[in-house]
Image (cartoon, rainbow, N blue to C red; front, side, top):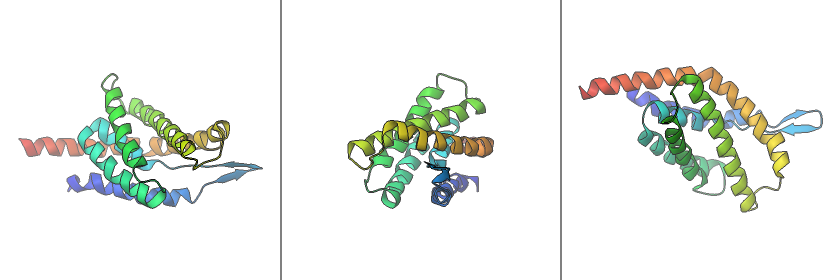
Length: 174
């Protein structure tokens, strides 16, 4: 049962991202702030750290392609970035302790990397016309704040769920 739960949650998070995107942009006074939910990549980072790099990269490719097809005009950008972020997460976590708080901060740091890379790529191919300072204040910081709330609320749940799968997987091999 738990074997199918991990990919099902990934798909559920994929479909929840656009729902939470409806709350964006947030207008405060004359300023507009864009909140980008990054639920899928947070979950993929937890899979990469606590379960399997291989599974996280495969899920990253599939969900990245789906994200590219349904949300942006360039096929392959997120299909490349999602597995790259998962790979970076596994490289970093080898050097530090896998404590839940550490993984939460790592997820937020890698969301920043994902946002900056996607911004630079969009700037490179002229998909966006906003400047770097406007990107940082109007999109990056609000995105990090919104996703830190998500990570704080669901990080422990993700870790627990993935550990249950690891225990089940070890029971299958015995």
